[in-house]
Length: 117
Image (cartoon, rainbow, N blue to C red):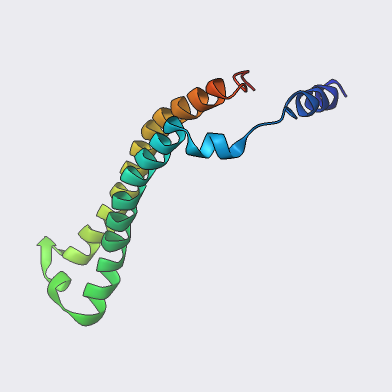
């Protein structure tokens, strides 16, 4: 019950009027958008290219059918590399998201919503 009361207090407290147009036009918000785009676009394109290369190569070529290590073909090596790539991108994004969070906190402080939730 106390948790619901705290949530209601927070909701009432957070209803301060904000000028979203001012926030969107602010240099700190523009910096946030720029940094996110600069990170997300190349990483997303790399992920998609790397991910779709395996099915395309296996469907239309036989280049991955050659043995890499013993009886293990390059297709298996590539498929395993996709797991490593996915985990790596998740770890990199998690670390980069901390920087994005700092920029968001700065935007909130600049616009009168600096209280931490």
